[in-house]
Length: 109
Length: 114
Image 1 (cartoon, each protein chain N blue to C red):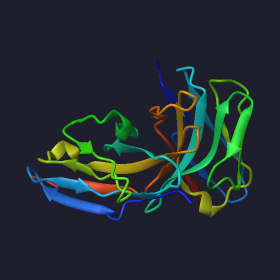
Image 2: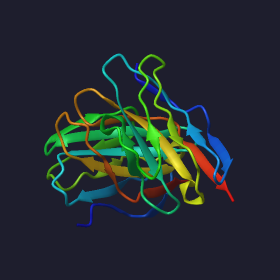
Image 3: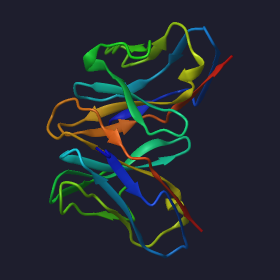
Image 4: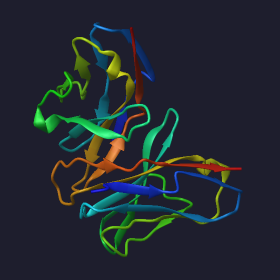
């Protein structure tokens, strides 16, 4: 069965510190993974997708098929990074997404 | 472009009442979906549609109906509301097909069932 697990409901780090949001998945097919972010009073929006191998707002995520992980990392956290982060897995040939439980990231000044 | 719009923003229902949550998009997207967001459970797919006239069930479809008569609209109907359906509901749309496309989300509808 397909599943996405984000083990941390809450994560708090200080400004300027590195941050890592964990995401593990279970999927028998070839995985396509995304990170979505929801800032306060804003819509859920795409942050990055593994297939693009890009860095957005200083965040990167590498797909590790051996560890079935897609952790989100940023070397120096900023206060504006405070938000709810969701890891998502695209399943099947359509656009269906399976989301993790979400991690609320708080950056302390 | 307005993107994905949802109405109403807030709704309170009594147990047993029915209602329709509206969702519309103006991006000519083929794929549309409904999610519910509950604390500690993330977003769970209720129903989705890959094009006008085609719908299918997601992970948690019980108690909800959908239809897709046009590309633009994808309403979600609660047949007989229950307190377990208290949640925040999000509609999303994306390009169809098999590509790795971004999903665009609406602002959400906060529903309380008493």
